[in-house]
Image (cartoon, rainbow, N blue to C red; front, side):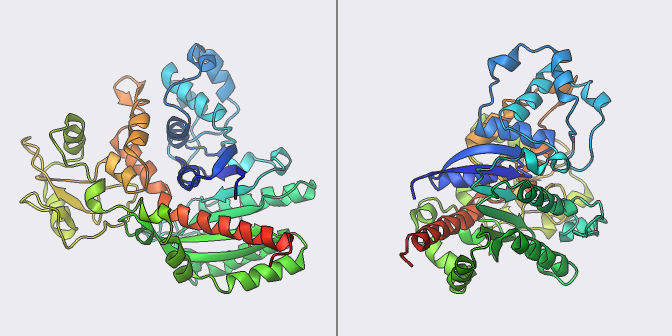
Length: 432
């Protein structure tokens, strides 16, 4: 299929969705993104547009930028809104990056303030990877247990904002997006959350969507990371009952095994499948890799020694890669934790430091399906926002990686979307 797809990314993060489509050689026109986390959308801008600024922003004064940013509900941590008084303390350089991330990304910022009447009528793909902290096991451990209950004011309940926007589009007689792609944790299928998830699917059906969900794992799609996820493809059929039944029949033959079997036959999988060795940056003769390794080396304390003993040892003390480890554990928003994704033996030569390190921020991004250049582009924007405090320190980049979606996992579901679009085209032309 040779066309350009108009894309809207809700909860866009650092743009795994756009990257996956690009990797499939699908032409996209990003109509809008929606992300309130300033670090995530500044990184998105650096990755997908340029780490450099447009001339119209380069020369803006601080007061002018602040006036433009005043109307937005921004967040410094992706969880809570930041006070405007805090924003006023930021350096003008960082404020320029923030404004660029809004303008060049057509960023709607806060999904709660988006109106259906403001949405384009020509959306082909709308993606929504709503926050998972109130659903995931890690989130539950930290006390996030409200799930996606409506009116719970949990971060995960922002799912219903997507439904509100789609309903407002329908009420305004606007064309709804042709495809919806959802990504979240498989816990949505648990007893605690399944009734809410079923209600969501029924809401989509009432809007005219046929939906099918899949339990998939990043490691099956060519990334050596154990990261199970739930993805759902929804196709707009409106009131075309015949097309709905055709799709139902079509998807009766498509399950997780079918998707994997046929996606693995594509060059997208064959030519880009990665192993652990390809994603680790352990050539310490390169100054930047050595410095990143040192930065990811913890102090030698009893708790850190337990982390080394109780987690997978990816690189052994003799410097070899552990042959028993074929993939790493799920990358979360922190590596300095027990359990974590795995550890590498590393002697920095620095007194008081452990003789092992965690995955570096660069490696965390690589294991999510991004490239070295993406990390480099983000670091180009790592300037001071306060004196002595930098905008993209190690832990911020790890958090962004942990919050993102494995790119190759998305390639699988987008590939299925394209095949489904071809099926629909055949149906409309009488070829099915």
